[in-house]
Length: 474
Image (tube, rainbow, N blue to C red; front, side, top):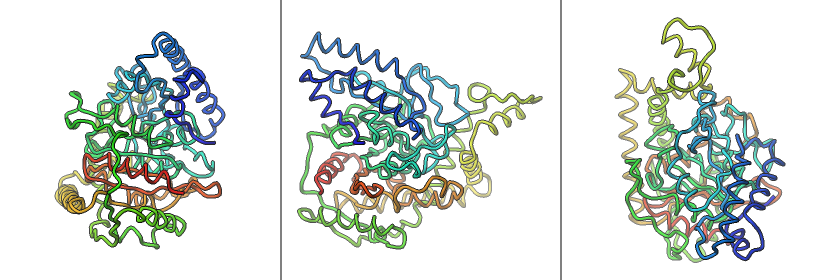
């Protein structure tokens, strides 16, 4: 099944050839038909249908003031807050939590006429690369139910892949938008850190987290990003920079660089390496590509990332004691400590517990200097080296992932292998640069995969120009 396009739908809507209500019904029908893929945690069916009817009526009354996202149907990851709705971050700990406010990104979407159709399954608190760490069970790839969707925004990717929304919001801490986009054959962008407000995003690792966008085409992705980006007084890390009109900016004279260490046949599947090299050939027809660029710190990005993110996670998740809010164990406890232990033991899954304990370890006395502070220094070195590359080139090209989608259950019990699968995506989160995954293989016989591009901070426009160029690749 081909995914939906908001751009195409909007054109038909304004011609009177369709209605918002019919489009919402179509998305809901698709979602129910593909429910075995387990990508929606909850569909907001009645609410979405009601809003669609209201918007249709408004359009009939006044065709001169059409909102930019009128009738755009959007799914949101289960760790993004939506007023009056549950947001559990894929965890038993927050299974009954209902948000008293909307994330800034969600609020901006609704103000522009978008419809939030449901919340999508995700790895618990965004921790995972396969979407198998969810309290609600694994998400299955829309192309092949025996394969994972990628994580942690796997539900978001599949909701787009199977035509159950126009666009999806996910979150990206170490590749959680881009890797599932690659596995599912859709577009996924992680903006510059701070480009989109994190207000209303349930935290995993605050200095890495960023809300991102997944879509079936470049135009829809760019349009939604444009409307959710911008300064926000509720988030001190949100950038105050003006938001460009991404769909109006196109550049054909971009310069590209390829890291020599990312073309290692020992870590990239042969089919993917061939596809990546074919894509490089296509880009090189009318653009400058410099290959063999040295980046000696690539081997350090994964350990640096996991040391720092687990440290931040152990701090962020310390608030969940199950007493003020969160899972409340039915076991009898005589002390506050015993009660909290019961609540957290039952509420958190294995991977979350593993990362909390790792974070506590690297922050503990005697290990803080050895691990955490050293990782911070390595992070700074990585940032400096990447900034040097971007003084010479506009875009850095590398694979999104080293493999296509894994078989379900194949690496979920091997955390080291799972962590290493993030080797190409965590770089952009460590440095805060914007990054995108574009599909370069959607052949019917094979699993899809993507090419990743990273740009200078604040230069999402270059990534969107690149994605538009790649969308025409045969």
